[in-house]
Length: 263
Length: 243
Image (cartoon, rainbow over all chains, first blue to last red; front, side, top):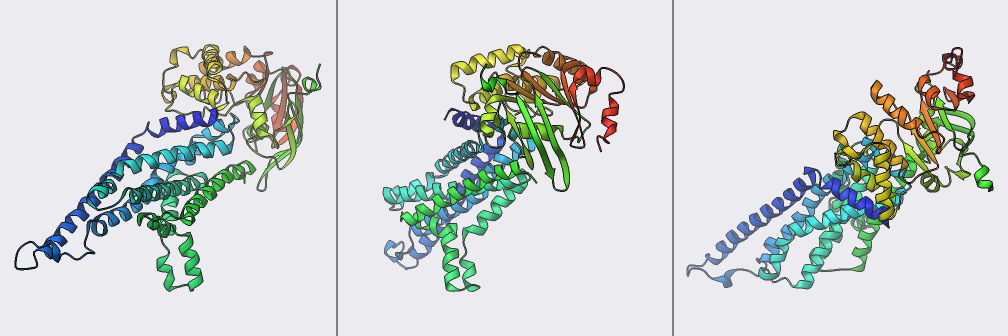
């Protein structure tokens, strides 16, 4: 446990010792704020059009049920937050292993006898903490949904869990890319490409059979993330995210064995 | 005396390593006696670093085996790594960490308890004359000081065997002298396995020498016998070394 904690402390110090971490946190918060206020502005305009459509001035009864804060503001904000994470997380995970190899410090670390398994776990733990921090920083908007949008605490907890699991799955994918990529840039691009490819296979439905489309839907990130956003927490979705993390960590661990075997 | 204590500190049997079609090591057999200072000598590309990486459990051989005090570096790399200190060719450290911070981190990564860790860090700082720069970021240090930090980290856990790859590579003459003096002071205290392409360095530091050329062992024996007279460079030339 001691080596793992030491590695986590070092990784956190390295991560927050560079401007990149602060930049990513600021960008995620900023983008979330912009998306939130943009949807809020749009919602107000829609509301105004419906409510003033009658000659008698403002009439809230004229607003149809489907025009509400949840449908028009919070649901799209959450959708965008998921996409923002997809763009931001690979920027954080790209350095995890690729930077160690570029500097030649991976062997310094391995020579301590800490072992590849602990290195992968330590890097994952730090990525997890960073994703959680991003969530907290950008969760202020879903939080207002409790007060203003008629969303209950249970629904909010499901949303937070979904976002966190989504972020962690993205971090795990980013770590695998960093473990195999030749450079940080390649790791980031591979992380983005993999995450966007896995995001949604709805488009593939037109080209493949029903059974294949169902399989693709089962491996895509969006359907599982979307279920949490709707307030549904199912064992199948939890198992899906756990599977993504476990497979990713196993692949990252495998990269060490492959490097030990060499070309 | 126990059976383990009678074993050589390092033994290699039929050690080969190929990178594609290129044979970096080809059937190396050698033993490094306990307490000796042993130099692997050879031109660039002779296979020295490959040998050391396999011995440190960081790379797998294509054939053969290496044992450190009887422990297989292939099958039990973690046990081997707990028993050795490893200094890589050129200083590969975390430039953003401070000297004391790096040593603390590496001691903790080796699983040393806090009290023991602090004492080990202080000992390493003192032994390698790093007290004055202990609070400075490693990236701001000269190459000579960075090499001292590299050496210091390898001694933190007081290992019986220290492996040093090209201890003075890339250093200026004054820094070379400084590092060589520090290594010379360690002779006899524990087993040192060095790699170098510098005949003078091997002569000054080692009591036994193995000469590698194009992945093959071309000479093995006491340093003064192999390097003390005649034209030692002939050892390099004999097998087309450095090709």
